[in-house]
Amino acid sequence: MTPITVLISDDEPLAVSRLVGLLNRMEGVSVVGQAFDGKETLELVEKLGPKLILLDIEMPGLDGFDIIEHLSSSLRNNANTVPLVIFVTAYPQFAIRAFETGALDFIPKPVRYARLVEAIDRARIACADREAGQRLALLGKTLDQLRKERSRAVDENHYLWVPRRGEMVRVDCDDINWVKAEGEYVRLYTSEKSYPYRQMIGDFVNRNGAIGFLRVHRSAAVNDPRIVAIKRSSNGSRMLRLVNSDEIPVGRKYAKNVMVVISSEIE
Image (cartoon, rainbow, N blue to C red; front, side, top):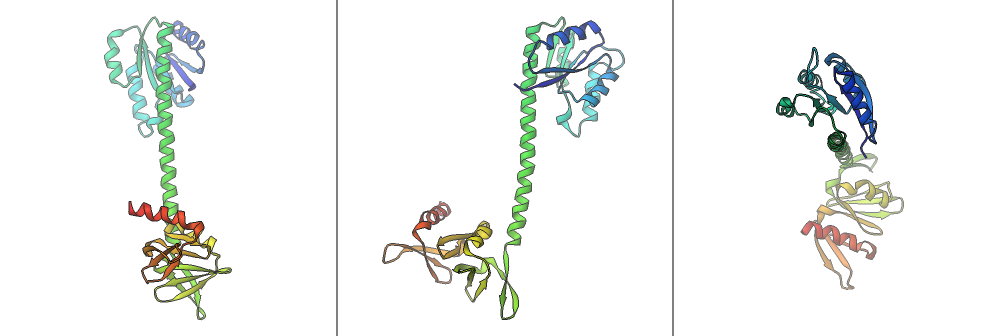
């Protein structure tokens, strides 16, 4: 059950007392404040942050419609902090205008318990929907951040610095056709040269899998975009042919995953 905090705003103390008594009979409802005029209502909304206001329309100074206008204006930059409003009034002729302000419900006085329960249930649903929307918005922001971080990581991983003849050479990962395990090193094969790189093949694939490197053998990984064909060898195992005509065997342990990746690209 979604808990709901309520502020009661009414200039009639007996009406406030009756609402408090009715609300106290309901589970998951907490009356956090009572206001007896419009100015006090606005102050308590800011101080207490209730999820719902039970709001009378006819009050001295600021009436119920004035309060809605002030709340909408002051909290417009964060609509999720605007409390829901249920009008509670002895003037049914205001019903149409009340709903036009965006009120959740309109309860005529004298308030009946069953009718108030119905209105509070509507408020619970609205609060749950609003909180779900907030969670989705937060999740969306989190996913956007993760995408940005992943994008940065991919950019950072898009080239490698490798030793060659006493200097460090930058090798673009797009130019690497495949890599071969050599103990604590891997050898990077481009169409022109090969380079030793100090990293074990498992770690290399874990780091660079996001940009297309696929483990195909205990001692080999290929750059997926560099695959141009797959075929059966004479002994029935699969072989991958790369853009530079190198042929790389596919180990039994890795065959299923390789075929899943290739099949998804064909589809």
